[in-house]
Length: 131
Image (cartoon, rainbow, N blue to C red; front, top):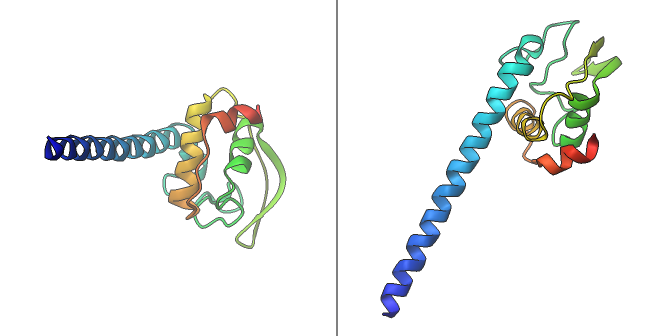
């Protein structure tokens, strides 16, 4: 009986690990999909932006592990001078508050990890607090 309980515990732990792994993959896929749909036209599919027009997200130290800043920029938009990797930009990003809190959190986490090299994540509740 003792061995059966260990077996059940091991199966349960393995199952939870698989669910967590798939959840992380689904979240990354969701972030990539939201990025393609809402961000890639300006910031490009690879996050490099367009010189003198749209700032790059790739390698941008201004956004690394600054999820709330990224989310606020998405929700409220941004305008005025901005320096990224030594290059100046003076444009306007429109507010995209029409996006759901979950989609904004997913794209923020995707951009932070994929392009800025960060590791921190934010939640949909954190985005809700910015609105």
